Length: 174
Image 1 (spheres, rainbow, N blue to C red):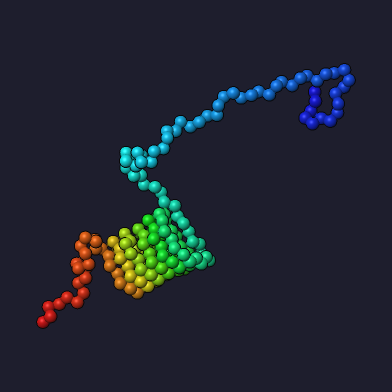
Image 2: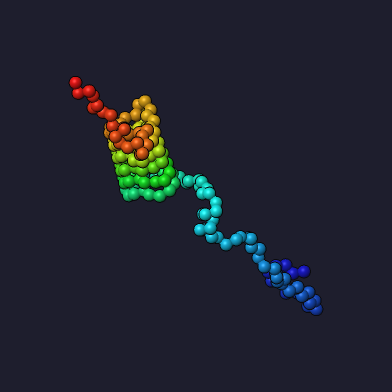
């Protein structure tokens, strides 16, 4: 019997047995039983499913300048200069620095933010937070030790308008 890549010739008078022909596979590859995708029909029949948002991270030691827009959560541990407009949560970690306007569902500040926060559902200032700018949010949580310079408007729904929120300086005049 010859071994694979055997370089010795067979003995005289012995004919090697013919090798069987290669077997050809005749079956077709299996395919998943998938219906054609119709995006418009699916959107009208089913309620919208909540999709888990992925986190994008600007790690410590990075300095980035630009603009962040889109859907998803953003975590900043380095330095970012530019506006952040996302349909998701923004976290500015302790030691991080953000200079720019912010629009997000939830804004958690543990580092430094120089800019305004608009249209947030909730804003949380941790005990290490330093914020310079205005805040307009549905709810605000401020930890002892945090620092802020700016105006805050929270707890008011848009339908009530600014007239109900601004009660400073009202007096009898007498």
